[in-house]
Image (tube, rainbow, N blue to C red; front, side, top):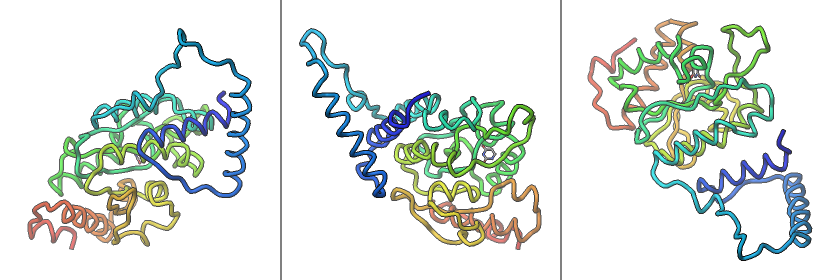
Length: 271
Ligand code: URA
C-alpha cells in the first residue's frame, strides 16, 4: 500500500499538473510537509549524482496533456488507480469516470456510482438516471450535449453482502476523489455546473448545508458558476408537485444561464 507521503505527493502533483498554483494548508500540514522536504533534501544530498548516460526520466509536467479530450483521457487513466481513494479501502474496485461531451456548456455532478452505474460503468444509468433523463427531456437537453460526472468515482462499499444496496460516500471518500472532479472542471471549463444533491455540493462548495438552504443561489467553484438542486433519487422518494417544481426552477435557472430558449409552457411546468 502506498505511504501517506506517496499519496500526498501524487495528489499535489496531480493538482499542479492541472493548473492549481496554490493550496490552503493548516499549521500541522505545513509542519509535516516541511519535515518531508527536509528529509528529501537530506536524502538527495546523499544520493548518487546522475550520469550523462543515464538522464533523468522526463517529468510528468513535461508530458502534461493538451486538448480537453487528452486531459480527460489522462484523468480517467489516473482515476483508475487513484491512490488516495484506493488507500481508504472503503470503496469498491470498479472505477466509473464520467459520460458526455468534453465541450459541454453544462456539467452535472452527482454523488457516486450505484449498483447499475458500477455494472455498466457509466454515471446515472439506473433509476435515478431515468428520472434525470425525464427532467432533461422536459428541458430539451440531451445527455450527449452535457458532461455528467460524480464526486466519487467508485461505488462506496457496504461489505461482502452488499447486493444492489448503495450508500452515500463519506467525507473521507469525497475528499479522496475531489482532486479528480476539480481537474475535470478545469479541463472542461463549462459555462455552469449543477450539483445533483448535497454530496456534490459538499464536495464542490465545501459546505454540509442542506440542499433546501443552498437552492436558488449561485455559488462558485474554481471560477465556474454553480447551482445546487435535489438529487434525482429525491424525486423517486418524493414525487410531490412542490418537489418537482423546486427541481424544475433550478433547471430553469440553469437554462437561463445558458441563454437557452424557455417557452411559456416550460416556465409553467408544475405550477
Ligand atoms: N446517483 C449518483 O449520484 N450518481 C450516479 O451516477 C448514479 C446515481
